[in-house]
Image (tube, rainbow, N blue to C red; front, side):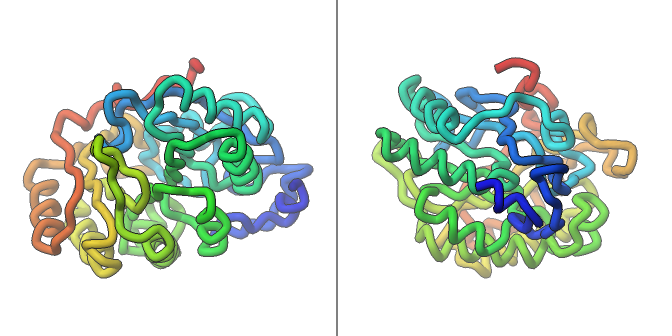
Length: 294
């Protein structure tokens, strides 16, 4: 497994780091670092349900979003190292606790270990859906490798503008890479399938966070998502941006206005996109988990 961390090209950065002796752009070495494992009640209703999503928060990230709400774990490797076997057991424990699914959050830096863990968990009796929760910055090769083990894809589609992608996530190539990855996810997963309880069993939910002052780009994102196929995925249009998490390089110093959010929402509806929206009350820091406990 460690050979895949030599000259690392697991993500679109293709930084070429030898993670056996150092760290990649994502901050990760060879150990799989997990910040927190919990039942998460604040995902989309069809994911959290009444019993929570079995969230596994990984540390490190291949993006550097200047407004990241999970900065404590995305910029720094907070948490503990876990083997693939330990990860598999953690997934089974979440299922035993009643979690509706297991939710792999920002797992891209650890792709070989995560695939091994999911495979082992399924062999040992994991039957709840596996959710792959990602910033959308994934290679098509990674999506193909994950496809046999992932039931629900939960990617972000952050920007269409390469300028915004460069300014706020240090990844000018993000728009095209995310588009290709999400298109492939949708092709492989098929249209969303829901159980009798309303919980999603398989398919794609695309998240988009509306940023202040960026509504025209958000509407362009809606058009790009619709071009993949409005009937082939669900949209989660998020309003939870708060400047509480913005670093000194980020000029987004206010919350999204009702006009901005509703304008993007109207665009989504006009394009035939269906899914989930958020109220203004979601734009508070308290919805971010405490990564100081496990």
